[in-house]
Length: 239
Image (cartoon, rainbow, N blue to C red):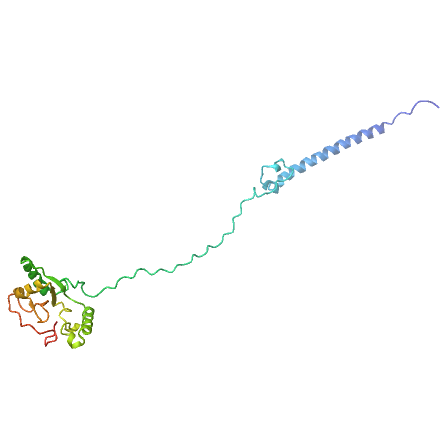
């Protein structure tokens, strides 16, 4: 026996060389396949969900964990709107009552406005003449309303005790010259006396014997006045 080792076979060295080379080729192939797969995924998945995810600053910006949606990041939710309650309707308060309009012209019983134009004109001329003589003629009762004449008549009936006695002083409205604006009562007494004496010059005459204050236009200016009647209860009944 000898101590020489048998020579190595060249085939074993080649085998190892081929194994290493194959492993390197396999690694390169796998790496290329991975790179190609990644590029292919980027080309095909252009609209992936990750692209649509908005970038939110904060703790999730590192990309490890997605940011959590909090009340600060969510849009505010509108509070539910309630339908407005109808306002209670108030009943209209009644306005001030307007005074009822009276028919016919307005006049004051103690003025000459309600008298006929003829009586008013004559009385004004006589009043001016009396004033020149130092006498003041005042109207105590000119034109009266129907209601006023009725009230006077009722009061006269109570005072004198009967209708017949009352109409000697106050006639009913349908017979009264005051209601028609054709009669005037004057005062004070000096004026009554002056007008009885000078009234004919202006067509004014005293009519009743029992009423020295009662005058009417019974004649033309400058004419003669008719005789006095005893009272309004006489045949002419125009007091």
